[in-house]
Image 1 (cartoon, rainbow, N blue to C red):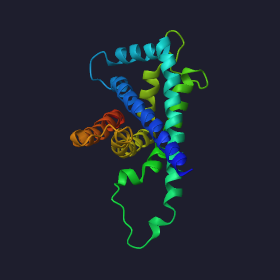
Image 2: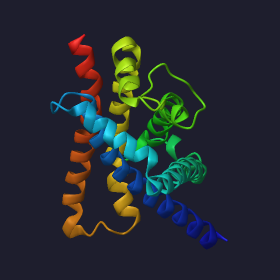
Image 3: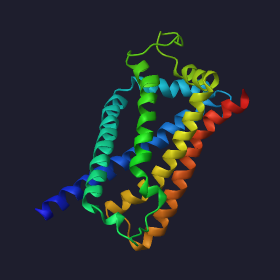
Image 4: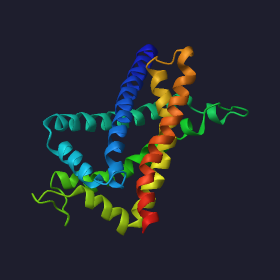
Length: 226
């Protein structure tokens, strides 16, 4: 019975880790597109709209969206289940006098940072994905009557400073989440050979800083330029 529970727990962690690595890859793609909201090039708006149109109409991307949603759901559900199982297995150990853990702040707060990011994700889906599927409306439309996501995003950042603040705070929180998640995923999957452990740790830390910083740069630009 114990072996069965252990196997089940490990299986959940493996699936959660694979889904997490998939989402980590997606974040890079998402950042690459979103950076064109700011004038990195003279034709940044044109590039953003071209990429947004491709993402909205390409049949392969539509399949990818289903996989992406599945990845989010699996990662969130299994993350919660694994955390609850961890709490249950520890019992009152954490309350014994003199008991200390060597875990980092990032690892101790994974469930909380994850849930906070999920709340922002729900808001993000309402503001953008719901527009795409017609469950929400906007005054910003292109020549074909489709939502103009470039101007929708710019309007959010320029007319609602509170949204920019929430956006920035969320990605700071996500940075803490990613710092542990990146390394933990490799460890769970058995890809943390001692020879490469330091490389994985450095890569995880760099990713957890650079990617959130890239997203944060977008609302900061609009806040500064106002």
